[in-house]
Length: 371
Image (tube, rainbow, N blue to C red; front, side):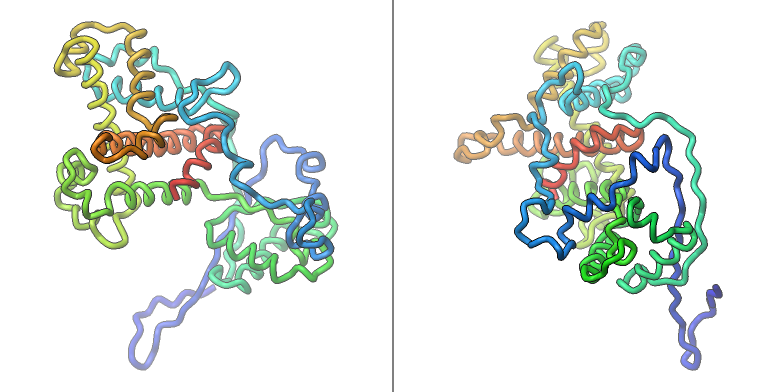
């Protein structure tokens, strides 16, 4: 492929070329015949199977209840299933030990890692770059060209696609176009042509970007909140005084800028919670004063769990929110919501970095409601 880069002139306008890259990632510890042979089964429950009446109950229709956790967000963990409440309490302890001052560094050896749910094993993986493709992924035709080209590089056979699924990874636009292609090809008969073998895998980094954007829309974008004492915009004025215009812009800040603000705002909020609880329990005005009292690990554990309970929305949050304005603490209510959104984001990032698949799945429903 040639990519002309000359600057356009009145006599020679710039040409447009589209190129798509692909990479092939071998699956680890997967028995192809046992684990990937169910294309035909998917066909029998697919909404794109025109041989099944639209109202047939065997057609699978995803519903939020399929992935909602069976217990509330703040429910303590059981022995075989640690909850997000425990993960949040771990983050509360981590923030104190890491950023609360040198007096808490002695607890690093006790902090450990949060209990995981279905973590991926640490495995060295390999990926194989595919040939670049002269195809425009912004169109349905372009996505079909990519599919066929990838199939040739992968050396697909019609018989394979009749029985075995293929996992595809891409951005959300790729998902939209692949679903559109399937809708267009419902009258086809072969598995290759009606595309039942396609299983799309969500790009978790795109989820992380959407989560950062949602935090901005809720806690930063509303102009009425810019002057709120201890609001996120107050942190932005302090941390990024020359970038306030970026955060107030119509389209919001870059992902990296918002990512950093979420972390710093959440750290600050949680440290303030520690200061309040240390004063209530030990009568000290600062975290340094708390450290000088030489608290033990049981104290740290107890207060961290109390903070995760008190400073996050609980089962009674809906009742409190429905009270008359004169009977509710709006500032504290907003702080609890912001703490929850901040800790959800921190846990999302941690679970992604550590391969904690179980906690990632538990986070999805909460982000669905936030989005």
